[in-house]
Image 1 (cartoon, helix red, strand yellow):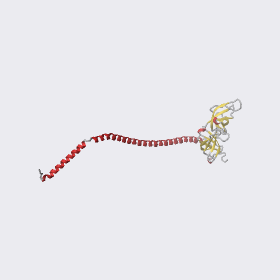
Image 2: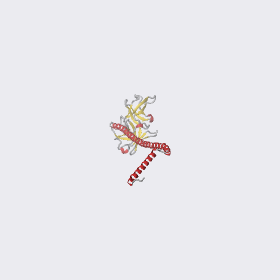
Image 3: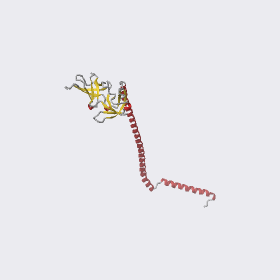
Image 4: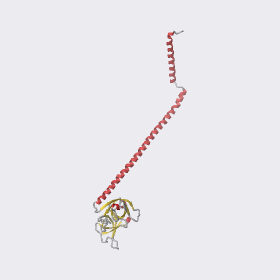
Amino acid sequence: MLVPRKYHSLLVAAVLLILSLAVLSYSAARLSETGFLRKTVLEAAAPVEDAVNISLKGLHDAWKRYLFLVGLEDENRRLRKQNAALSDQLNRHREGHIEGLRLRKLLNLTEDLPNRTVAARVVDRSRTSLFKMILINKGTADGLRVGLPVLSEQGVVGRIIETAWHASQVLLLIDENSNIDALIQRSRAQGILQGAGAAGCNLKYISRVEEVQAGDVVLSSGLAGVFPKGLLLGVVTGASRREEGLFQKIDVAPAVDFGKVEEVLALISDAGADK
């Protein structure tokens, strides 16, 4: 049966429409129905993909934790360094404050002294047991000379026995070669204070008839003209009247703790300044 020519276009359009619908239906059927082989592949791939994703996530989290810990360690290192710097600064301020207190005591001491004074710092101590000495950082360029007395805020330290331009050796009160004219403050009995090394000092030539007690204060008498009168030397710790002899045996503890002396004053007298 022949189709009139005027319906040819409609017929072609209808055929194309039917073919298009058929293709779409087939494609939809293929998408909705998965084959056995693909199902097997998907079934096997799913846990592998899951494991890979978990591993990648674990690596990612581990890397993030590593970066966090590295940053935290850097921060801790910076804070430790800052803390050390602040501690050092605090210690220096504290040390400066303590030094200021010591120097203030020395300054107050100068107000009661008739002599001109030179402040000096202890830079070394004698390491031998034969001589008890300290080295100070002032010398002839600062007006110091041999024989000048040296004090701390606690009392008499000793006297200068050797000088250079910018350094001086000081023989300590407790050295056995040290002898200072002294008197007992309470009784006014006079004698010679001699160094006894580690034992401290001995007050010699005090008559047996004099009453001496533990706790009596010993001062410089000023008779020899080296040490001004009234400087603190020490305190009597014991006295005994021996059966023989004219004098008592008197032990004296020095007023100065020589192991802790850091700053001293040298007394410069006008007498002998031009010698």
